[in-house]
Amino acid sequence: MNSGVVVIGAGSFGAWTAWHLHRAGCKVKLIDAYGPANSRASSGGESRIIRMGYGARDIYTRWSMEALPQWKELGSFVPCGALWIAPAGETHALETLRALSVCGVLHEPLPADQLRGRFPQFHFPSDCWGIYEPQAGALLARRSIQTLVERMRGEGVAYEQRSFHPAETDSAASYVFACGPWLPKLFPQLLAGKIVPSRQEVLFFGAPAGDTRFGPDSMPCWVDLASTFYGIPDLENRGFKIALDKRGPAMDPDTENRTVCGESIVAARAYLAERIPALANEPLVESRVCQYENTADSNYIIDRHPDQPNLWIAGGGSGHGFKHGPCVGRMLKEMILDGRPAEEPFLLRSKAGVTELATGSSL
Ligand SMILES: Cc1cc2nc3c(=O)[nH]c(=O)nc-3n(C[C@H](O)[C@H](O)[C@H](O)COP(=O)(O)OP(=O)(O)OC[C@H]3O[C@@H](n4cnc5c(N)ncnc54)[C@H](O)[C@@H]3O)c2cc1C
Image (cartoon, rainbow, N blue to C red):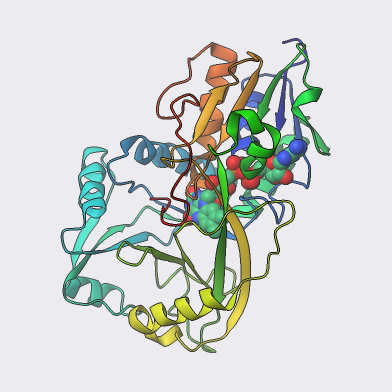
């Protein structure tokens, strides 16, 4: 390993991997085909939610707790809190409540009448309840990754903008392929069907002039478990973000048309009319088409290539991976430099094929 580690992909997974390797004293080179957090990349959006609640999957709760200070240090965290909205008895919310208690995460279960008092922007029917996570919030996604890469370059980490193919690897270095939705194209025999990119549409609605109720000082990020709509308050005056957390159709990250279709706008307006009525007729001020890179169980892949011991794969963020970049990076550093074995739930060999693209969500 005299030539150190080459990290291919400067999204959240790759940039943080390069960072942890660099901080451990390793010689690192970072390569990206289109640039850090580019518009095609999954990490290229304006904002991402960082929440601790993860249903029964405590490992991700603990990773969110570990990652949060690292994002804060980067200056990319907006401390607006996060709100889960759930129908009575909803399993994921009940599991989240348990996990937050077990892991020692600050949280407040709130019945409908208290939700109405705390968050008057929303309409809450009497049979719903919520969990508020005051320490959660939003991450400025693109900006944070670009800041991290600039910081590394300032400390001497080499960065190159070009497309790098697995056939170019040799035995002189270790290679981490953190190529998000491109991984199945780069490793078709290994990953086709095990990571499937899906088209996801994101909408930004403008609040009425002078109305500050939808900014991060006034409302939290939120996830509505009944509808699987989720949202982020109006950050940097770009508009109130809303999207549906359901896997869309399969897509190619290089060539996909990134114009949103009218159906998602109609569906979002219908939802807003019920849940956040003040925004239902406000104008769409921005939109984006991004992609999830789904695995069958929505657990990431962090593993060694089965035939090439100096080659590692990190991906399968499945619509929720951005926040955990610092932990993916730390884990890969331990695997590459310290010999830590790959482990469940991130093993490549235990990943089934993705079969339910149309119905799955990232939760
Ligand atoms: C709409 C939407 C909402 C989301 N919301 C959240 C959220 O609220 N919270 C959260 O935590 N996560 C969220 N996610 C998921 C999260 O954004 C992704 O899981 C995460 O960004 C994946 O990062 P990555 O580094 O694996 O991939 P990417 O960011 O896609 O990075 C891969 C990089 O590899 C480069 N690359 C590809 N092929 C090559 C090659 N051959 N040579 C060189 N470079 C190459 C690409 O240019 C790209 O920059 C969301 C995702 C979407 C789409």
